[in-house]
Length: 466
Image (cartoon, rainbow, N blue to C red; front, side, top):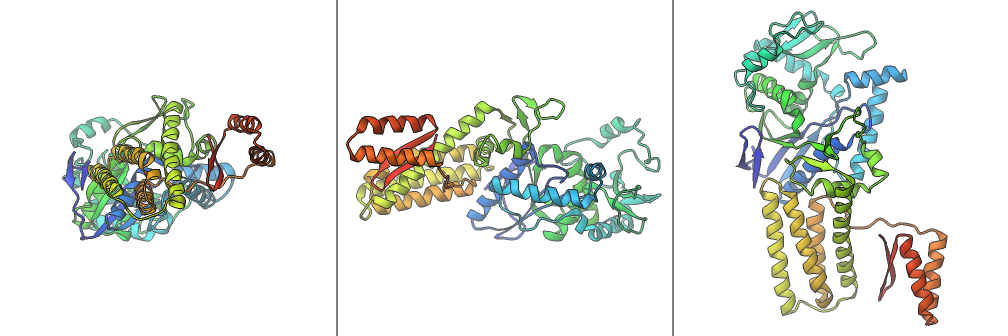
């Protein structure tokens, strides 16, 4: 299995720190509002990576945090006249609802920054003791130049960075020894939440949060650290500096970053009017369609979100689900053991499973993995009704397994028809019994116009929404 490592800018064979186990840390959202569609991409992508690793037999310790103390959370709390914890807890719960809708598995651990303050203070104290940090009037800064390898992830030259920062003066940061030094601890401001520390009451800087939470719940060296490419600098670069300076061990073996999500070819922003939350998108499209759409491109590629492309994904997902419905029908109606023809077809099935796995093991190329599923769908459509019960069972098991790795739910949700539609279906059945086929066809067309497609099977009438 090969992973493109942002640290080395090349694909590398995946070898975990401990055989058979994977420690994976994914930076989670800052919970001051509903998650937006850009937040959804890393959630879906790295959930799929986790699922494939588990499919391959790894015991995955998947940690993803919630940043529940932040300027934006505090500002919203002030606006509503409530404690900041009220805002963060509300949107943690809303985030979990959206993750469930996207079929993102809960992490092994979802740590909250506010519950890990003591560990962060301990880590900061160690950095000061090792002369990698210093305190000035209640603020603690990391000495960026004390870490010789600073810039190794983002490939930024520290002298170039300093040239860009030389003239920047930030109010309250006059005590900085170097413009590139970043905050590990900030002093309390009036009306803000704060915790006691050796440097006075205050709260942690953003970067130290992830360093401490990954260390506590995975260890000094984690196998895979992941997030959006917008986090490479400064967040992930700073995490490396402070973690390796503190622990004297490599922080992460493999760094994975997903590409940006654009909306109709433009960067998503509130000012451009193209900013959408997952909750808003769910009113227009089933979230399973959004998940399938996100996986239709390689995770490192930029992805353009548009109605045309999402509709295409919707149609593609429907093709897969319809094929699985047909295979389930065959399981209910086919008989007998495997035939020689079935055996030949199962060889083709295995070839496509191998193709799927090869795609996933080449830096998790979900686009090519989905292409293999479509080939399997085509084979199933041609062969399943001619095959035996045992063949249909094996085909169904394979399709469900490969879809589950991608987080595709193959069981359709039960949808209730309203009384009028139910009455029309019953009337059509009665018309067919009376051999009034003209009326039966008329009702079928009427229902089709309402987006309900009927299919007559040996078990009775089945229906799907168009």
